[in-house]
Image 1 (cartoon, rainbow, N blue to C red):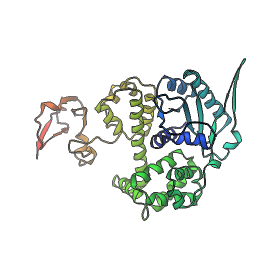
Image 2 (image 1 turned 90 degrees about the vertical axis):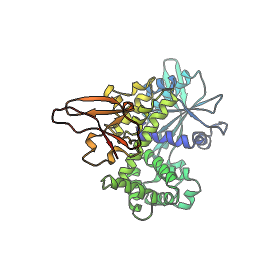
Image 3 (image 1 turned 120 degrees about the horizontal axis):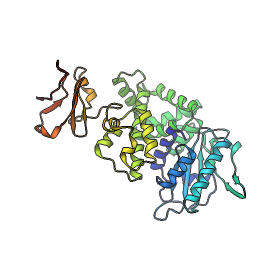
Length: 382
């Protein structure tokens, strides 16, 4: 599945771990015991199935300690026979890899044509035949909610309604009005689920509707708008949402690494968290799915050491990001991994910060290039 859907689904199920079981029971009539929390699977099973599919894939195991079943959850803006066949093959492979443990295949899609391709999928090769019966949750299974009050009764169902039917203006407006009444964090989270899992047409309608409500109605959206305006972006809301997606994707990278048992040193965690380059975060997330060591994420030494070259500058000791420094000083400031990088146009040298006096009124600055092309650290007290 595409990256945005993969991330949104992970966040959604992390917040609502009962959701896949609920959909399998209510829509598919699958007999699965209710209760318990699902856990994401990031092991050799996941790796082999992901290679077979050639894309992101979400696999969850049943409640511990027995984890008696596995669920593949796929978000697809469009459903096709080829897509069903591909995911059915993934389910069959997972069934074999997991020692014949029960495997369920669940699709969540806003595609109105989903019902045309539903039904069992038969995989045949020689004398071997395997039938996979996926459960497809499409627009016909998701209610059209046009009233903020009915949405408020079940915010999760409201998010799904916006994802599937948000191209209808009345649904989009009701959803945005609901968000206006929620705490800012909850509103941002629900909007993120819907807009990231929705097809492009729905995404545009939802974003346009939010933009329309920003100046007057939506406090959470106004915060995003102001954040973007402070950085000089006319489309402040869009920029705020983009930054939010970068933070969410960075969290996904770290979550995958943790689940795979990969140790993440503090400096590498800062590098990932402060990166706002979505393409680079996408590459890191892909590598994290099969990484066995933190260095597997990075292209080369320079990328593994440089935390702020492709993202938001990390903060200094006072908590201020270096990007807030004056325009005259910013080109000369750099900080990473407990070291001060002292550099000029010709030379670069790492200086151990521990060799300098540790006082509350001491700041280390990256000096401007001198006339001889050399550098020195200037210690400035206040």
